[in-house]
Amino acid sequence: MSALTITDLVKEYRSDNYTVRVLDELSFTAEEGELVVLLGPSGSGKTTLLSCLGGMLSPTAGSIRLRDTEVCELKGRSLDKYRMTEVGFVFQGFNLIPSLSARENVAMPLLVSKSCSKSEAYAKADELLERVGLSDRAKHRPSQLSGGQQQRVAVARGLVTDPFLLIADEPTANLDHVQAEAVVRLLRELRDAGRVIVVSTHDARLVPVADRVVQMAPVGEPVDELAREVEYSAGHVIFEQGDHADLVYVIEEGTVQIYRDALVGPTEQLAELGSGQYFGELGAMMGFPRSAAARAITDVRLTALGPHEFRQKFEGRS
Ligand code: ADP
Image 1 (cartoon, rainbow, N blue to C red):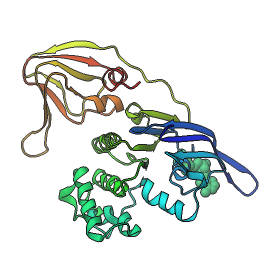
Image 2 (image 1 turned 180 degrees about the vertical axis):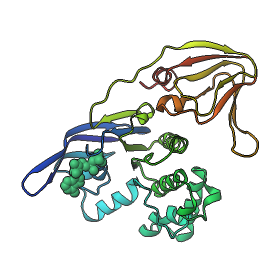
Image 3 (image 1 turned 45 degrees about the vertical axis):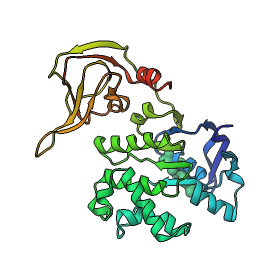
Image 4 (image 1 turned 90 degrees about the vertical axis):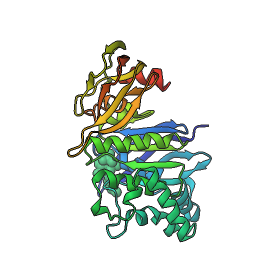
């Protein structure tokens, strides 16, 4: 049995004198630890589907099974419990409460459900803020945070009840590519904890990072490139920050430094990588410009390959 099974899901909205069928017998499954991307243009039913998954909207027909719960049959208290404990929501536009600190916003679902003491709720919020790299911003209000930071606070809030299913509606909308990459990196890390993560987007750049894509409207096949070996001498800059990203690099031999130039002050070293490690994967998979630069520290031998092939070889996914 799959962790999530959607079968023949139909949702119709009635207007004055006609009915619009927004979801038309949609079926798909997802396993634990998978990141599912719902891809489609505005109006293709993504929010409708997420609302049904979250138990906020009742479908016209069909079934949604999360582990052994038939979501469409839940009512009253069991539906409330499902919404509060099984599902975490990350809304479009963050939906953070402006007068509350990041810490208070993250703790809010626990405080509202009264499922634990206040001090436990705040301790959990602190733990999650650390997880999303924002411990030092815990006391800041949303207006004092960047868009990317606010989105990470929203992800932390979505996770505070430790839900099995995390739903995110357009989580990278309105973010620049550096911020969007940080949010996607976080979502990819979260699936490793065995959750199911369902993300809606109209942005095809998210497709290559998905384990499963549910097409709410058809799009073309991704283009890929064949793997090839490349060699660079010590000191060679493999790519610069902001460069167009098409290839992922796997280090066969030597050491590579990943760094980012600061507007003021010294260059920030992000990582030093050796043989068997890889870099440049997210920019290449998503078609984002490089968010950092890479330089050979020693003479290096690398395998350069396209993102699709990279995923097949190194992540065992197709
Ligand atoms: P998306 O998230 O892909 O933009 P939505 O699920 O929000 O798509 O909407 C899909 C379609 O359903 C749209 O045409 C929208 O106008 C319609 N729709 C959404 N909610 C309602 C509603 N409550 N009543 C009537 N029509 C709706």
